[in-house]
Length: 145
Image (cartoon, rainbow, N blue to C red; front, side):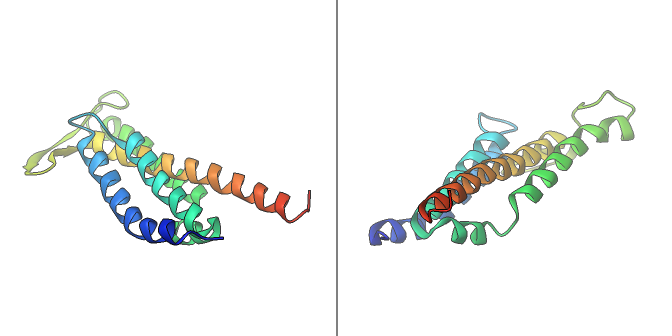
């Protein structure tokens, strides 16, 4: 049985939680926060949506397969570390910064790229765990096990 209050609240909370997750992500390379915490907040939003509407609907709203998110996130994080040896002959994971400073973000650089990779990886891993556990519950409810 679906709760009218939960489904209505979730419709408004998911976009707010995703917006807050992006805020935490972008704030993280200058202040506390970053890709890990932002990814957890985004995953919590999708999990809440899954509780309200069912996990298959949450997977549809997530839009990407969690395994692909993990792969893209890891590739982004490793790529941010490889840019410095390729471009400047510096050691792996040496930060590179742009010359232009933006009002809300400051200078962009490889730390933000690394945080975006962590953000995507955390969303992928967390949602993979949640969706896998929900599949086991559905199998047990149907009496297959």
